[in-house]
Length: 303
Image (cartoon, rainbow, N blue to C red; front, side):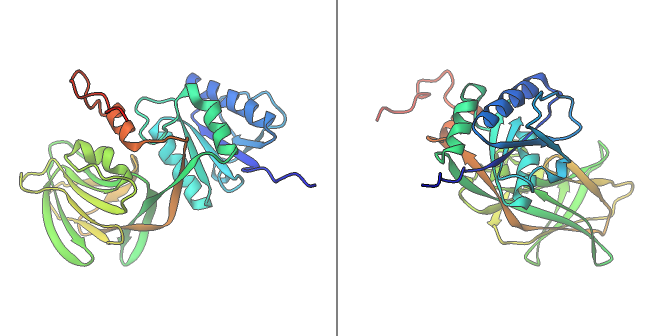
């Protein structure tokens, strides 16, 4: 009888190996995966010596396309970058948290190898997350395009200068927002930058787009939640010496010039995150947002 084919025969490792915590974890993972009979690849040009001739190094842009599973080691920034790579290749991502917060990379270092085995043996729970596509149009053509798992933000380039941003949803004019900028977020990103600006927490199972003004000049300018298939457009109104930039998941895409239109819509690809068995989104919220700390209601009720 032929042996059953291996799940995820090729596994890619992604992370900033110059961080000793990340590099050390990647070395342990590579050795473990090779022992489990997997082909292991990592990005070339990193400051790390894997020490195994069986591990293959490839250009980073080929990391996801040449693998069946991507294991991201680091913080949420690494997870965002890895999820965008994996989404375009249609493969899942498992996040190992070696950063500070860990909303997305929800596997702690103590359960790293156990969770990898859960993934290889089919015990992890896949979860689909929508992405946004941001496109800046000039003269009727898309001049800059990027994907975002968390959010697309228009932020002022110079301190002390207020922005006036006109917004449309599905072609209907919404408002001209005066303030420090504007955030267009997914449900995933609702616990990131949007949350710090007063936006709501949206469960990731709910496909939605959240519109959040940044430090609005008018206090009645409040966040709005719209459908996931809505098309959001923003345009910078002309002010003397006004400068703004478009930022996708914390990475600057380009400058937004007055009169130039930014179009944000649901991307045609999704990210698939793998969670270990027993994953509990609300437990993560309690932990990361410190709900109930020091109070009498901090413990969950007994079953």
